[in-house]
Length: 77
Ligand SMILES: [Zn+2]
Image (tube, rainbow, N blue to C red):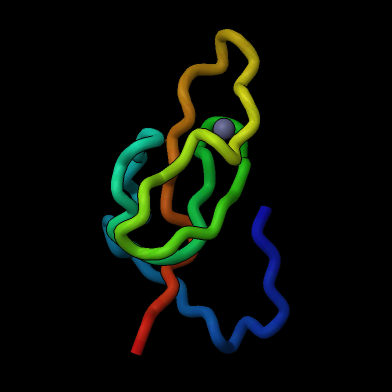
């Protein structure tokens, strides 16, 4: 689970981008932290980079494929 200390720098959002589940190889449309909806593994990634399989551990058989879901969107100014 992602941790933070200074909550005044985070804002809750209802944006639909947080509901999309993406497979490895998809382009990350937003910079930030992505969480695997299946196992909870988390990564940080830059906008436009490819969501990876390579720094995610293997799911045990029967668990299904990696599904990245945006957890925290990093806003650039
Ligand atoms: Zn996973």
